[in-house]
Structure formats: structure tokens, C-alpha cells
Length: 493
Image (cartoon, rainbow, N blue to C red):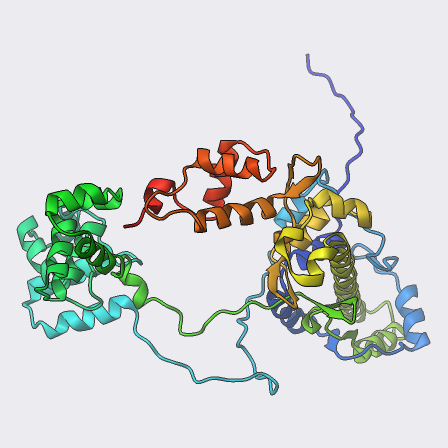
């Protein structure tokens, strides 16, 4: 027998204004400009420029008007009192459209923005198809060649088996070609530029480049023999074994290895580079002004926005009209919604500025010794909770600020995440930043003998001699985070 039950629960949901603030808080400065441009396009009640005092009559009519067709947010003042917690219901947040900005940075004209000529470049595929046309192949081989070019990945390799390419030709082009026939065309494509293109693995890629040199010196001949016959030993840096099998001198082997290491392991990246170089736009600027730390937001983080006076006057005019008229009431509702959205957006931008500044001030205060002289060894262990407690905000808010944000200092540009690190216990009883330990680990590896690199166990002992009590697995983790290979792969002749 079914029973009807009534349960009462208390849930906390994010309001549309909170969602808007969260999204604005977590985007970097470069995307903020695009987001503001988008909002200016979709909301005619929002304008650029300094704010001005609204007419008292317009304000009164704005507050007195009662919109019965939807939610009334006229009681909303600002976002200053809002806080965010990880335990909130974020369904509404997830379901919202992602306003990442559909306009590209270069859209529109800006007199203050420096312009550069647009460079037209061919893609890798277009370049290879053009070179294929120079061969003057028959129609069948041309289709096979185009199929092979279409199978080349971004780094320049063909990793799809030849048998599978034959099947693609049969099902897609109605061409039944043997593997030998496809490989015959493949070898022609491998002679294209850039050197090493259309190789099926790294070994073949390096061989193509070495043979393209058409060099008959001992250095080139040994380099080809190393890749052809001793590639596995070369990848594992077993140079003693290679030298013994080649029966060559140490200096000669070193020249051959140096020649190989200068080859391009990813030939496809040569043609796929962007024509415009990317650059990092800092969100904060911290300078040492005669012993005082000046912290300012990037000017693009603090745009001057205002509510349109014409829309406020329009609301005043329509409100004095016949409210019983359906068309007038719909117009007033539309105008009021746009005014509400403009006010919320401006408040969210202001709240974003305040939150960013408070967070950056707390970071500078916590890591003050670093900002004096830029010495990385003076960085203190710091986690998100430390800053959250200092400015009395939630950890999730600090995480959103630290994500994708950067600061320009007198010593360079650093991501905010750079200043957050765990603590490592030392013999003196104090905590050292993991960043400090990584720097010392990097120094130890750079100063190690190249013919006999230090293993993780030896690095662990060296760090303990300096007073840092960390385990070997931690040394391995830090080494991997620094993109430093194991001792065997660091060995040099």
C-alpha cells in the first residue's frame, strides 16, 4: 500500500547574480574584455563611461513599478554581502550558458591598439597537397597520396597502419590498392618538406632526415648506423655499448650523437605554428615604491561602466503612461529587465575588483620577503586556506581568483598559483616551501657529473644533508614536476 509523505528540507541555491559573479571572478583579464564587449552588445541599457546621478523621478518610478509577469529583483542592492561555499547546490550554475565570449580579441577597431599586417600561411596539409601536385602522378596514385596526407597527424606522423589505409581507400574511394602500392606513394611523400614528414615512428623520422643530408662523413655514417641498428640502445643512452659495437672513438661518437639530437622529432609542428605570438596579460601589477608595495589592478580589470540615462528616462516616460495598456506594460517590463541586468553586471564587476585586490594584498603580505628581492628561496609555505582565513572568504573563492590569474612584479610575471606550495619539515623545526626544495633539487641536478648523474636515492641523501627531510618518492615526484628525466636518461658523453 502506497503512502504519501511530506518532507521538509532546507537547500541553498545560487542566485543568478551569484552565478554571474562567479563566472566573472574566475576568468582572466584577457577574457574579461571579451565578456564586457558581449554584455555591451546584448544589453542596450549598459554603456561605457563614468557613472552619473540618476534623476530622482526616474529612480522613484523605477522602484515603485511592480512587475507581475516575472520575478522582481528590485530589492537587490549589491553583491558585497555574498559569499560562496563548496556545499552549495550548483545545478543552476552548471545549467547556465557559458559566457566565455564569442567575439575574438581582434574584432572591432581600437585607435589605441597597435596593428600588424595579417600574414597568410598555408596549413601543413595544403602545403603537402601542393607538393603532391608537382609530382604529376596519375589519378590513382594522386588519390592514394591525398589519402595518406589526410592520415598525417599534427606532429607529422602517420600512425595509422598501411593495411587500414588500404581499407579506407576501398570503402571511401572505391580504390583497391595493395600495401606495396600504398607504400610506394608513401615513400614519395616522405621526400616532401619538412624533412621527416609522413614517418611512421620516431626511428623512421630520424632516418629520413639523416639520409636527406646526403652526407658521407664519418659523423653522418655513424649517426645513420646508430639509428638503424642501435636505436634501442640510443634511447636508453647505453653509449658504452654503442661505442663498442661501432668500434669508434669517444669524440666521434659524441659528434654523431650531437647530430642526432639536433634533428626535429616533430616535423609537423614546423608548419602548424600560429602566425601571431601569444602573450600573457597580467591581472595585477606589484611594484616596490621606496620600500612600500604598491598593488594595482590591470586597467582592463576596472572598466568604466554605467547604466544608460536614456533607458532610465524611457522607463520614467512609460511608467507615467497608461499602465493598463498591454503593449506599454510589456515595454516597461523589457526596459526594467535590461536595467536590472545592467546594474547587476556593474555590481559584479565592482565586486570582482574588490575580491581580486583583497586576495592579492593578502598574498603580498604573506610572501612579503619574496616581493622585496624576488628570491625564490624566501617563499613561505602557503595554501589556499591561509589566504581564505586572512581575508575571511571561502576557499573556493580564493581558488577561483588564483586560477588563470598572474601578477607582474619587478622580477617578472608569475601565475598566482606559483605562490601556493606545501610545507616541508626541516631539521631546524621550521617548514620550508616545496618551491624552495625544488630549486635546490634543480641545482643539485645541474651541478651533478654528466657522465654519472645522481639517482633519486643519492638526491634524497644530498637533500637530507642540507636539512630537508623528504622521502625518495617525494624526490621523484618533484623531479617529474620539473620535467627532469631519471638519472639513466640524463647521462651524457
